[in-house]
Length: 88
Picture (cartoon, rainbow, N blue to C red):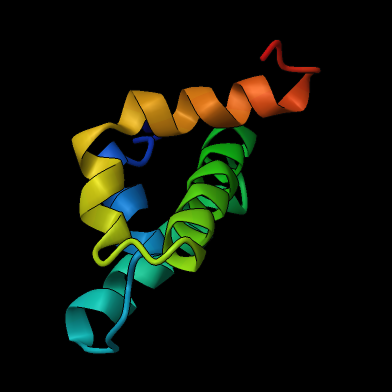
């Protein structure tokens, strides 16, 4: 059996911040979708980053993809902490 290659952070950020359709983005979409169909771990990451991206975009952040790329741990962390009751 071949070892499954998980999505990279770059892949996920590119995927959630796609804003144009071309050959490259179509390939990325296909690769991400086929992987997250079988990998729960990456599927949850993609969903998490999608939420952060949407929130940043809604908040008026110009380039949300770059913002997440600059601080991916922060993005992932803010999501993980949102699951529970956060201490303010």
